[in-house]
Length: 68
Image (cartoon, rainbow, N blue to C red; front, side, top):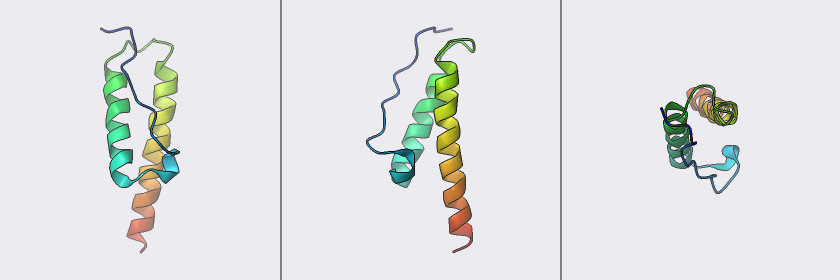
């Protein structure tokens, strides 16, 4: 398994300001990077924290859309 973290580009805006498509693409990059490195790699926690932030934003947007 790869030990170097996969390149995940920092999005151009904070998570809450990303478009739906930017958020989707950022999520895919993070998921791909997490799968591509060893589970005990030091960067794993940072990537998972960022992914949790993206997932929370997507869930919030879905909740708002459901109540609109």
